[in-house]
Length: 214
Image 1: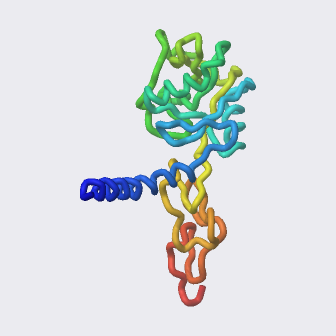
Image 2 (image 1 turned 45 degrees about the vertical axis):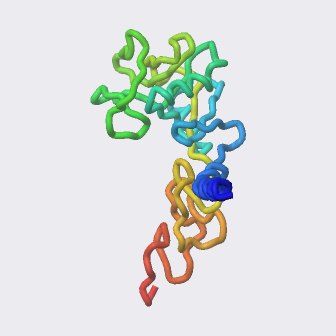
Image 3 (image 1 turned 90 degrees about the horizontal axis):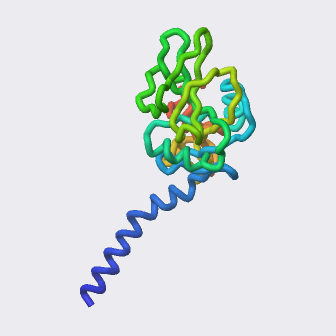
């Protein structure tokens, strides 16, 4: 009986420990036709239409996304798995070369990309032209430099849809307590209150107490 009691107690504690994590995962969903990256918690979508790098980025942004950033070999393999049915041509990712310093950056980052997966002989240069980066089945989903004004398919990345008053990459942060409303009270990316503040509070996160004359 004692052993049975200890097992039940251990099981109860285990459920209590993992339940918040399971609920968090359930509240963090990707939109229809997007796939969750298990390494980042973000959502990815492959586009078959061919666009320039800038036009592709604009389409991503229209969906609350941006071109994908690949920061590890595991993420690169996951991207390859998503695009495996595409055996013709390459597709743009979010890496590009700065025209002035010749360094490759991710999107609007100001620090040099640390992880890269260049194909043999890459990155090649395009004199007097901006360089962007694509990956393809033909090169084993290793990366190649491309003219940014050429057209290619592309892969977008966005934050998941958070519920239960959460936000962040994995919906693992709670919305500020002083946000107005009862559910989904804050921006799913930065946590700013979307419907204003409770009486007596102000600021993007409603974390400042109002003065008597405001």
